[in-house]
Length: 168
Length: 366
Image 1: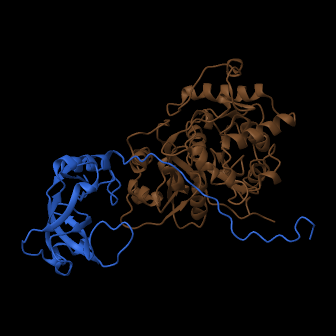
Image 2 (image 1 turned 135 degrees about the vertical axis):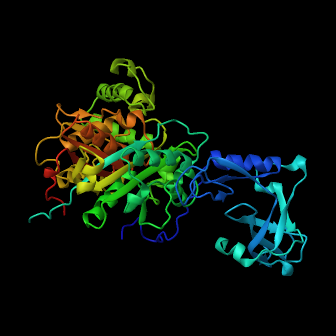
Image 3 (image 1 turned 180 degrees about the horizontal axis):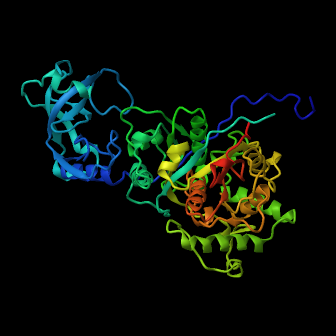
């Protein structure tokens, strides 16, 4: 060991902070979806080959690999296909626990997306439950899913399991 | 030692997006989808003909995890099919597909690559490919590292700033015939030397443009290749080699990995090539690669304009193979070599030898 190394300790940890900035481009299809949210409507896109409606669409049908050019306006209503009750507090939590996150399949869509379920006790949420979107006030609408305040039960009879089993 | 016989595999289709500085509206999937459609339509093939799909890209460019998985939406992968991805230029994905096709189980493969350099700062992103302990924390830009290499070349008496300007002028002039090129110019080397230094000794013209782009190639074996392309570009040899990540341990004026890959790909056997597509993002790197490939003055180099005319990160290497193959299809070349590089200062290099005749597909390799 040389004189310079004597008395030194081996380096066991090296911190190398990394920070990168990006300009995100949602793309043509997702921009249509986001602009729809800013108007308070759900806009999906239909595959010209298999006819499935994706929301949000990424611009192509992942099954057929073709562009989903046809824009389809979907209603505010749909069903809970599956859900999760959140009981664990965490930093930055915006909703009082327990609350329910659900996969919501809008009527006419062929893919579900995640939404908050409110105006119903968490232990009463169930698969097949009919729900509708509650939008934020018009002056708060923006190109973001934050435009959807939450989903709430419509009170209609539950959907049959067979009607959504392929979306689980 | 006698080399194993190789299965004839050819490049039969090639498509690329028009290279642009900034693809402002389309995301990666939307950029790639028409390219994949075009590469199939050109030969009347479909995704259902492909026994394998292999892609090259990096999530660091888009800044999102698993962007290579969502990119599969551009192809459509139902029913499920064999697929792979390399965090490298698409040329290296092509190598993986070629190796798999040597096993004989599949007759066709799709290779694609994509990358938008515009969402982030590509010079910072490329710093992250350096060794994470000693070099990357310094965040050296690829331009600075390339300038060190260029200066070493000049100090060794093997290049002049005038020669760098000549390389840039020739590539950007050739790019006039390339409808997908991003930077074209008729400026003379003398005019280019009036450019300011970006990092001495590199002036603006010696640098690649920042490019958003995508590319796709279809490989086919034997009769399938002849069915799809009258004059397929047969891969008679392909190899890639890497040098140490420690920049200080390399002679930056040489590219021994290119030379070794070329030797193993059989470039120095058989008739000389008449055309080369060299992936040299910086002008001086073309001089280094030309030397390693032992290209004579009779060889047409970079008729496409090369990476100085368009440098879509992760695709520029695959595009070199596609451009070379397209000239064999068009009977503008009998035997060509395509080169792709990755890493700082030509760290890793791939050499692909293409021939109009499948009779040239003989042994070689490991």
